[in-house]
Length: 208
Length: 191
Image (cartoon, rainbow over all chains, first blue to last red; front, top):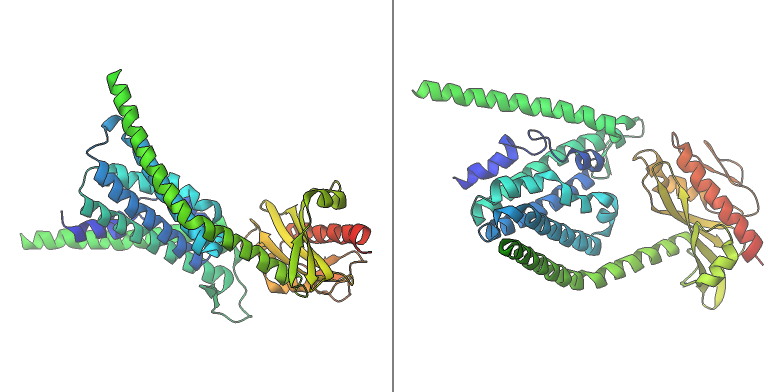
């Protein structure tokens, strides 16, 4: 399998947020500000790459019967490492993300990639898959959190964009607004994806 | 039977490796974390009582004696400038809208509130979370401790502070907390 295909599979074709719709709870909770969305995305990406690499390395020594607990231990270890380092070097961010950092352990995207990809593929492909999924996750969080911060607080990355006459639409900072925006974004993303897919089909038919 | 032992052994090895990896990263970060925590708390104390240069935490017995039944006051610090006691900082936990909310209040020896700072909160972004912003916290500065503080939309009188729009629960929680601290200071510490 081509590595670029593995990478773009995570970013576009099977984007964890826009296509697979998994791990929604923390997505809705942390995307109130662009800074938080980016930090959460990077934390998840780090854990994804780390756990995918280790799971791929141990896939031949771990018996099938105990693979799930073994994967969970690997994932929990990486999450705890990320948590410790964030606490030590980026405490403001750690405070902003709060409970959602330790909860990355139970974010299904990570176990899903370990189970469905890393436990069946080699080291390099698994690392690229983790990176692709992580980038797809981060991009989705970034788009959502920039829109929410802009509409809800009139700023982006804490930089005020609109004058004092702008009345922020606070609903976008709260869960209902997150659902509305996420729904619209998924609609846009899917229509683009569908157009591209039908174009590919057409091209193939023409080539015949 | 044999297989069970084998499986347990493999899992044990995996968890043992994980534990040692965690032990290493803990030893790398634990000092930094403690230092960052200490700095954050030191910075907060400096912010709410900026006339003090050094802080000394009251020990448990003295704290209990002062707060009595109000165990939601979790910490009191004396602030010193040189050898003079210039004021106190109080940590208090109240019930906000989204859950527990911890904040710090400073009171100077001449009976004025010198500042407040929200330390931990789970309030709604854009509403209750605005309690961390200066337009709210600064409105407490310089208020005398001998009169009940109330929150209003446009503070004018000496005992009025800025209310947060659409976040009455958060505002009241903090104002009530400050009033409790004010009372305790006046009764136990002002002389």
